[in-house]
Image 1 (cartoon, one colour):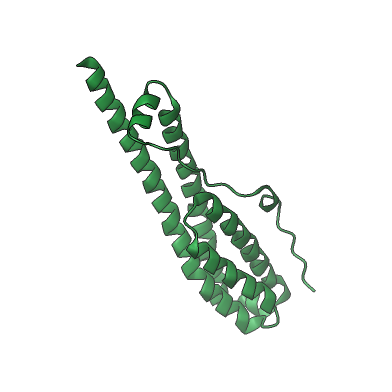
Image 2: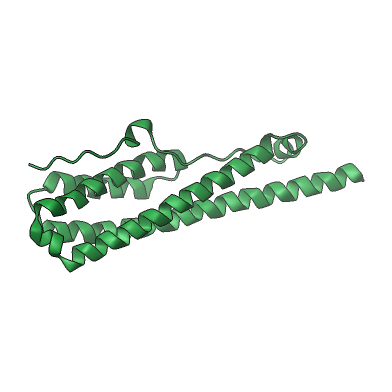
Length: 173
């Protein structure tokens, strides 16, 4: 009886932790959707002032499309890190184009994206904390027994690739 009650308690805790991890992932997805919604507006605003920066604009657009197709946290982390770097280069263009720097539309889009990035940073940290807690639970004894019995599998961390952690270098010609 006591073993059965303990098993139910462990099972319910694993379900709660798994759901918390899934909810945290959904929060990241919401912020990424906000970012993806802002990118076309930003590209349009920059095109008006810096039309010859076509390669960068195409890169940002292509990365946004790739990111929207990803479902794995690890793969999405790679693509989103590339997009983040490309957006940083896009923001650096404002120094080369005084009209763009003074554009209210561009400045508002930049502020909106900075806000989204801050929310994303928090959501990623929260998600990774939820994954850590869940993974700890499914790997600990006696929880491990219940986890294996009911096929609870470890979660996947959201992380950037090593080369994408380097600071962005912007070179305007």
